Length: 341
Image 1 (cartoon, one colour):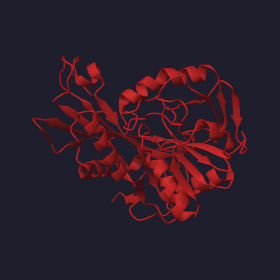
Image 2: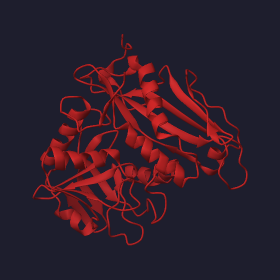
Image 3: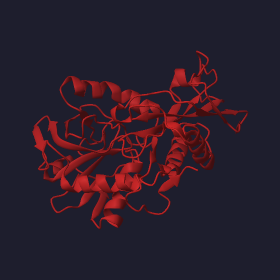
C-alpha cells in the first residue's frame, strides 16, 4: 500500500481531512448499521440539540505504524467504555462498545495510506464523537443522534521537541463535586477555553485546577491529568471523582508498577505537598507526557528539581516505555495493542 505524499516529519498538530470517515444514526430508539463516507460535512437544523443545549461528547485515540510495519491502535476498548459512561451521564444513547471498536477498525483500515510511517514522529489521530441531531427547543434530551469518527495525520504535540511547561494555579474551577468533570463532554472543554487563554495571555502554558469544594487538592488541567514523582521515585497521580479517567494516565501507572517495578500511588494530592515532589508531568493522548518545570501561585512559585530544560529521569523512562509499547519496540501487556487487519 502506497502512503500519501506528505512531509510526515513536518506535520503540525492540526486537522487535515482524510479520505473516509464513519457515520451512524440513532433514530426511533435504535442505531442503524452505520457506514463509511467521504462526505466531511455535517448538515443539521439550526435548532439541533447540540447547538441549543451542548449535548455532545467525544473521544481521542491514535493509530500507529509499529516497528514491524503493522498498523495498530492503543486500547480502543477503553475509549469505547469511557464514551459509554459519558453518554449515560448526558442522557445520550450509548453507542455499543463492540461497534465502537469495529468503527475504529474500519476508519483506520480505509485510511491506511494516511497512517504515518514508523519513525516519522507522526501518528494518525482519531476523533470519535456524538451529538444531538434533531430539533429541540425545550430543555430536554434530543431523540436523534449522530455518531461519527474522523481521522487526521498529526505531528508531535510539541514541535521542536518537548520542553518543560510553566503552569499557573487557576482562580477558576474546572469541575464541581457530582458534576461532569469525570466525563468527556464538550461542555467541559468549552468552559476551560477562557481560563486557558487567560493563562496564555499572562505568559503561562496551562492551568492547574484545584478542587472546587476546598481549593486544597490538585485535580487536573483543562485537558490532561497530573503525574508526580516523589524524591524516592514513587509515581503519584491525583484521585478525585471529578477528574477525567485518562487512558494514558491509567496505562502509565500500570507501566510504572508492572513493567518498571516502581512504587505507585493513586490518591488525593494536597496542593501543599506539590513543592515536595521531584518531577511533575501532564499526561494525555496528544503528547503522552508533557513535563512541568514550574508552577506559579499567589504566594510564590514551585520549581521542580527536574528543571526547565528536559524531562525528569523517571518521567522520561515512563514516556520511553509507553511510546515503545505503542510503537512495538517494547512488549505490551495483553490486550493493549489492537492490530488493524
